[in-house]
Amino acid sequence: KAGVTQTPRYLIKTRGQQVTLSCSPISGHRSVSWYQQTPGQGLQFLFEYFSETQRNKGNFPGRFSGRQFSNSRSEMNVSTLELGDSALYLCASSFTGSTGELFFGEGSRLTVL
Amino acid sequence: GQQLNQSPQSMFIQEGEDVSMNCTSSSIFNTWLWYKQDPGEGPVLLIALYKAGELTSNGRLTAQFGITRKDSFLNISASIPSDVGIYFCAGPPALTGNQFYFGTGTSLTVIP
Image (cartoon, rainbow over all chains, first blue to last red; front, side):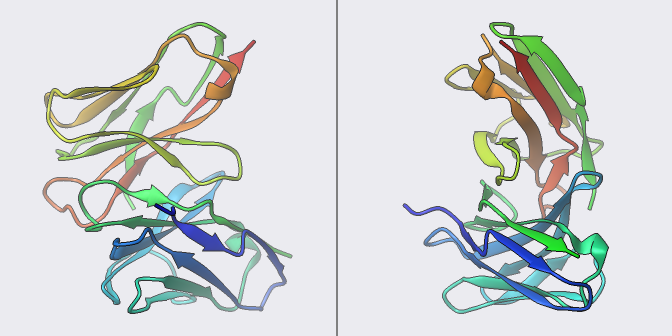
C-alpha cells in the first residue's frame, strides 16, 4: 500500500510569492491534515480536511489555505510569503481524522528568501 | 495547537544502553501514538496504543498506555546508532477528539 506522498519535496521562494503544496493520502483515507514544523515551534496544526470539507483549523493567518478534492488529494496554499514561513510542511492522512492512526508524508521543505 | 509535555527533551546515551521517555497530558486520551523523525523527513509511526494499561512492543521498542489515560511511556532497549532521531508522542484528547496533539519531542543521540 503506497504511503502518503507530498510534492514538491523542496522549494525555494522569495518574499511576497505564493506557493502550493500537494498531498496524496493513503488509499482509502478520507482525512488529510497539514502541519508546519519549525525548530523553535515544533509541530503546529494548520488544518484538517475530511471528505472535501475543512473540519478543523489551527491558529494561522488567512494567508494559509487548503482544499481537498473528491479523490481525497489535498493542496495547501500560502500566499504573500514571509521569511517566517520557511518550514517543513507535513501532510498526514488517516481513515477518520480524529481516531486511530495518523500517517505522515516526507514533507515539503519550503525556504523563503 | 496544544502540545503534550514530553520528557526528557534530549538524551545522550552510549550504544547498548536502554532509553526511557514519557509523555503527559492534563487531558484523557483514547489513543497514544509514538513516532520517530529523522532530520528533514516526516515522522514515522512506531507504535499505537488504544487501551489504558496496554503494553505493546515493536522489536526493541516497548510503549505503554498509562492507566490514568493521561500519560504514555516509550522504552528502547539495547540502543543502536540508527535509533538517533527525534521521538514524538501524539494523540487525540478523548473529550474534544477533533484533532491530534503532539509532544514537544525527545531528541536521542546514541554514541557508538
